[in-house]
Length: 231
Ligand code: CA
Image 1: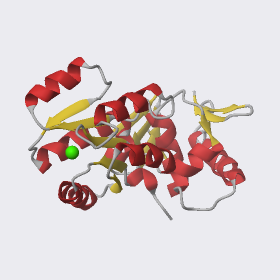
Image 2: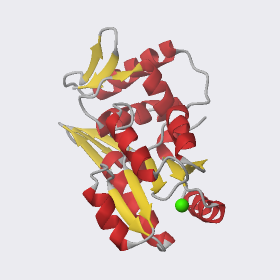
Image 3: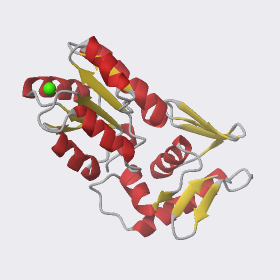
Image 4: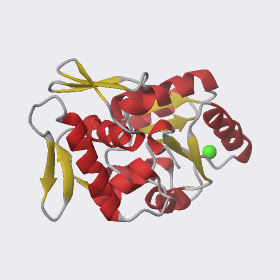
């Protein structure tokens, strides 16, 4: 079963095949799932097909420029929150790109060191997908350690199955966000797994039971006609 939260996905947009392959190789070696695009148009299609956790986007692309791709992604509600790291050829370009207010989250100048770029990718993920980077998440009296897979509530350890753990880490990464059953299926079970949406209800039920095992209020909210949210 795909444990998609353990392997964050990167959309890599680079038109030079050699650079694209080296980068993809290094990202995969770090455990990332990589989707590759050779131009901006392809990137805009793939971003819907395989929603990434972070995007590495070359500025100089044929036809649709990296800047334009960035702008479009940052104006769409579905992709606005996805961090974008822009690659540019010279530091003067970085200043220019910054001035254009594309909304990119970070900039890396070519030639970059792969080690440096990996660090920047991880930094973006720690901010947006902390559970995937093994961070400790806290919500009210609930504490989830993504590294050791320990969950406590008011310091009392809780027993969670692997699916319930992934559900809780998804909720805790964005408290208050309403997740549809389909979004939870994608995130928790993985895109390629066929599971009925009712399965989500079953596991949310188990998660609730586990969270309230030692007492306390049910922190998971059912949003009628929409899905679930934490708090
Ligand atoms: Ca290029």
